Each structure stands twice: as structure tokens, then as C-alpha cells.
Length: 177
Image 1 (tube, rainbow, N blue to C red):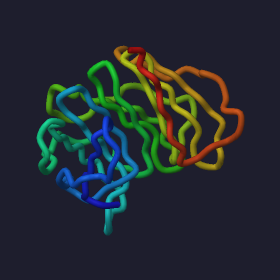
Image 2: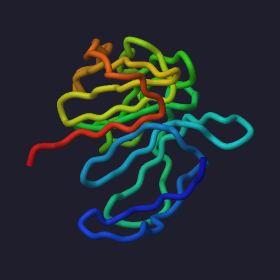
Image 3: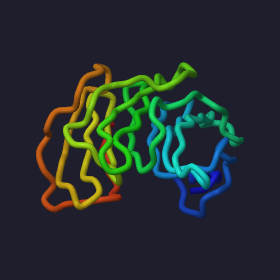
């Protein structure tokens, strides 16, 4: 875990540039962004607790340090996350947590319970568009894929299975132009 925030300009090639710092040391969390703001949610903290429930935000157009946004309801590490429809989300955590939490990106405050994944996991990832979020894999080579509607708080539903188990993977989704 670290406090450093770097950025790249996607339209040009080159090295990353320092953006600023998070309010606390953390990694392996969730979050999301809109055109104005980026939000990080929870994750693994540095010693002594090794978990963080802190939510931070940055203003995308202006480099600088993150500002406290609020807190997640649970304080566990190894979480995944995604964002869409004006919400940032953090999901799963440690070995067995199936919790899904969200914040409204435009409004500073604590995270709210969204629902539950079909199977708890750590080391998972998710992707989304403004309509649907999809969770993929998890620790111990899970093949699980779940989905949920981004604007309707409810439990996730089975989406299918990965062709092979994955953990600490990445997910991406395309947004139509």
C-alpha cells in the first residue's frame, strides 16, 4: 500500500506524473469516477491495522492531494470495486465478505449498503457502465461472475462463469461512443 496518486494523459504516450497523495496509506480497494471527481473506497491499509475503511476523493481536473470523502461501513482489505451511473462501489473483501457498498460521487458522505454478492471473496475485480456492474473471479481461483443494476440497490445475481478461475485480476468494460 502507498499514498501516491499518479496519472497519465490517455491521448498521449509517456510516463505517469504525480497527481498528489491519498489521506492514508492504502491499496486493493474500490471506487469509481465521473467527469468531475474520482473516489477511492476502503482497501488494505498500512501497519498496524492492514485494513482501511477510508473513502477519499480527488477533483479530476486539478492535481492535488485527496480529501476525506467519508467511510465504508466495514473495515476489511482486499476489496474490488467499480463505478457508474454516478456511483462508486466497493465489493467483497478478505476471504468471505460478500458485502457491496456504494457512495454517490457528487455528494460527500459515508458508504451505504447496496446488497450482497452471490459468493464472498477477496482478490476480485469488477467493471461497469452506467447501467450494470459485473464482478469477475476472486481468491482461490474463483470462476464466479455476478451482476447488478448500478442504480438499484439489491443483491447481485449469477451472470455466468469465467472460462478458468482468476484471482487479483483486472476487468474492463467498453462504453459505446
